[in-house]
Length: 409
Length: 104
Image (tube, rainbow over all chains, first blue to last red; front, side, top):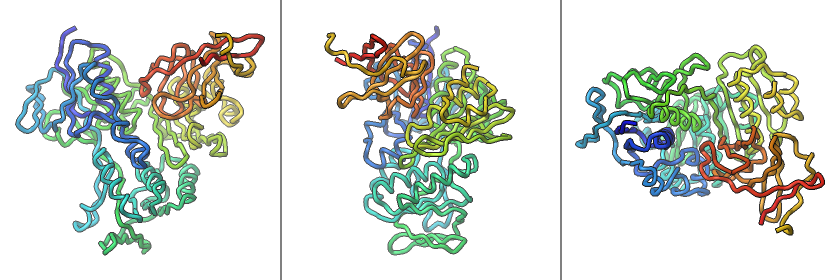
């Protein structure tokens, strides 16, 4: 095998799993991760949950310690890449240049910023990285009333965590249900009820008219004239692929970096994986851009294989989860068009799952239950989707019959 | 050695390609029944504190219900991330239709 200089821009989940996969298949090439955060690669899911409520510390969310990187001969360079010269294979970080033979881009995504008025825009907190989580944690300790703008997964997870720190939390969502239209309304309502049970206030159908500074903090004025007071504001209103580095280059972009089913970009020897890609999914025969833990991991592994010369299609069925209070929500598949919904179970204790069906096959599924209660069935749903199996709806409906049976058909 | 065998359950109380949870003292285990016989591992996933009792048994693997890490039931090997630390396994025997675990 030829020895290559393999460089990875970004040091998140896709990057670390790509690096490990490359090393598994290729012991000769050098592997270097360039990350602009001053930490070894770490897991992001705990930032809004266990890290915020002090159940996990910084060193407990690292994927691997320093020794692991040394053992695997994977270098981590804490530098921000400021320019990429795709013609001459050069990465630039301010005054330093680095050559590469093969490049993997895993720059992830960037939070959308709220634009209300110049007086307050810079006072709003966001959560994507460890530094921001530390800031929120430190600030939250000193205040009581917190407003979260955006009732998506990240906002609700932060709301759940801050509630556990005994804060008064208000969540403001512009649409008529939390977590977006992909989550079935009955499940969204159960999650809303769980927040309200613990004292969080959830405002749906709530567009912000203005935000004013007050002596105590902020006054958020909604279009329906409700007023919400808060000492700090955290916004979680979606994200965009982090592609600014590649504007005005030859790299093809369209809602992310365009890649094929092999993580290959429009430029030879340049690959991309994770949140930043708008990738072709051969199973669904469409392009997808996903922001999830499982996707970042598996797409990274897939990129690693292809970089190491093992040509492998990426056909992973999308899956994600969210933990709020004692509830675990899981979502799998790609639920654009379905002709029927089958609901399995009716208690959170045993889990409730909505299966989205088309032509007697599962397109996707969304489950909610106490921690651990929907994972198995959602996982089987993923496998049934992947294998394109016609399902017996009676078994789907009957929580007393294990779904494993559907795999045998 | 023989004194350390602890009775778990009736052999036929565990369905094929399935598992049960078994608690003993302050420890918790998973007892599996697969085509090749009965096996036992620690109960908790090595990645995060979640019990594998609600996980999915497929062939000779157990998949965690939380983050889909996968372990080999026979060897305890972590075969799919995010799990990277192997899970401990324990000897199992079946006598007179009863399953026993040795946790010494």
